[in-house]
Amino acid sequence: MIALNKDGTISNVEPVTRDTNGQREVAINAAVRAVLSCAPYEFPIEKYELWREIKFTFDPRNMLGG
Image: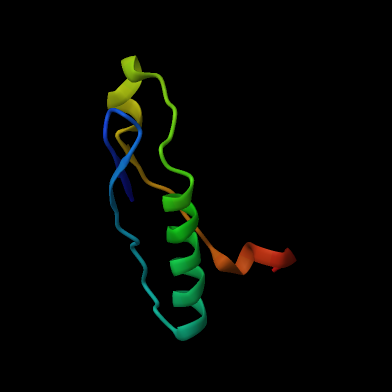
């Protein structure tokens, strides 16, 4: 889950996972770094309630044609 401030900066990134084996943990950490490096995000302020928390599924099995 990504929590955003009204200015598009990140207030929190909290990966939720069921399995933390070594390879998966590396992939999750890379995804978190990617989310952080793209900030600040530019979303319409009038729709803040829609984007203040973003939940997404990241499945490393789908990487590289997985």
